[in-house]
Structure formats: structure tokens, C-alpha cells
Length: 303
Image (cartoon, rainbow, N blue to C red; front, side, top):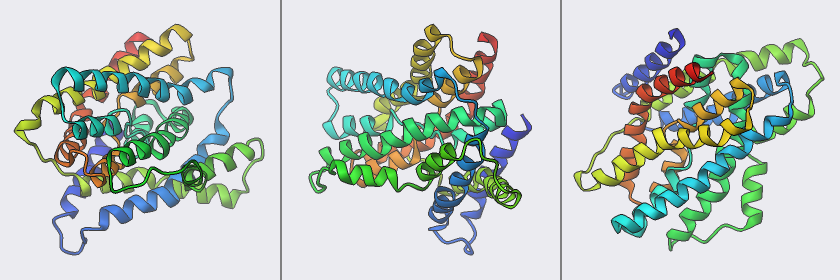
């Protein structure tokens, strides 16, 4: 609970820094880039070598893709039933399947489950959410945005392979079993320790909430799917496989994360229901501070 309170304090600090003229509007973006290029790769390099490889590690990697397919079906069905505009449906197709499994997921997993849970969270994010963002979400945005060409397979592969945390993931797996020199270990530990405060301050700095009465129904639908239905999907898919308790808990918890900020930025950049997307990302973040402790409590009792 202390770690959870610290996360809330970091976010509050970010919201207050936004009011100071010394911090320009680009501050949140700069902090995000620091996390993407420095703190997140350091965390991956730090945690992955500590992971014990087992036969069921494929589960947190495949689970996000299975949930994605289920959510796509739910969104298309809802779009047909409610006769939603194709741009609105496209926005939900981009934003709903992808959770904030790194920027919010990592600090929340560490706060609730401890450092030993981080390798599972990293596998879920890097081989699931991140790959889906770089491929699936990019294609959907290009498909529905007439001003953007659909990216080639080579373009998407380059985007994935050159992403800093993915490079760190491959390097960490290759170095597993080889202890780091003490200086390198100290460097990784100190850089990884900056991830939670920096990214939570950035989340607070960038937080916006814009509501539109006309979009109340799709917004409510999206929040229910993202915060309640998706973790239920994860639980239903994993439970029959009898995975390790911590693996199941972390995977379901990651599936319960609010919408990914980067996916929202992609959708807004493609002019896909920008007001709805902004409201969904903002309100989802707020509500997740209620729903995530609820899911943690439920998972603890199920185990």
C-alpha cells in the first residue's frame, strides 16, 4: 500500500508541475522519451536475467494477442448494434485492446506484487502490448486514415527491432547466466530505479480529461470492456491452463490496465474520434486506481 500511495503522489506532483512556467508544455514528452530510451531498457536488462525460464512462459506472451482478438470481435459487434460511425469504431479498435502495461503496469505490478513479478509483466508488455502497438495498431490507424499509407512489413519489422527496450530484451536473454560486472549492475539498478517516479510524474503532467455528452455510450462501453471485461477474458483463458499463481495474477492484472497512452496518441494522430480517445485515456487512468486494487484483492482471494 505504501508503494501504491507513492505512485499517486508522483502523479500529483506531475499535475502540479504543469502549473509552473518553468516546465514547458513538452516536459511530459521529454520525460516519456527518457523512460523509453533509458529507464525502461535498464529495467529490462535488470529483471530478465533473474527470471527462471519455464514451459508456461509463453502464456503471458500469447495472452495479450488472444484478448486482442476477442476485444476486436466485441467492438465490431457493438459498432454494428449501435450503428456507430466507422471512425469511432476504428478508435476503439486501436485503443481498447492495448493496455498501459509498461508506463502504468510496471509500477503497479511492482507496487502490488513485488519485484519478483516484474519479469512476467515485462514479457506481457514487450511480446504482447508493444508488438501489438507497433503492428496491429499502426495498421488500423493507417487503414482508416486516408492521408497515411499502410506501413510495409519491412517498416514494421524495423520499428520493432530498433525499439530500445526490445533490443534490451534480446540482449538480456542472450546474457542470461552471465553475471554483470558490479559497475554495470549498479548502473542498471540506479537507472531502473528512476522509471517509476519519472514516468508517473510524466503521466500526471500529461493528464487531461475531456468529456462529450454525445459520446457517453461508447465511452461507458469502452471503460467496461477495458477495465472489467478484458481481465475477465484473461482469467477465463488462463485458469484452465493451471499456470503458476504469480504468473496468472500478473497477467490478469496487466490485462486490467487502462488504455495505453501511446495507442491513444496514435488514434488521435489519425483523427479517429480524438475527443472520445482523450476522455477514454484520462478517465480510464482515474478509474484504474479503483479497479486495480479491486482486481488485486480478487486475485489474492482466488489463489
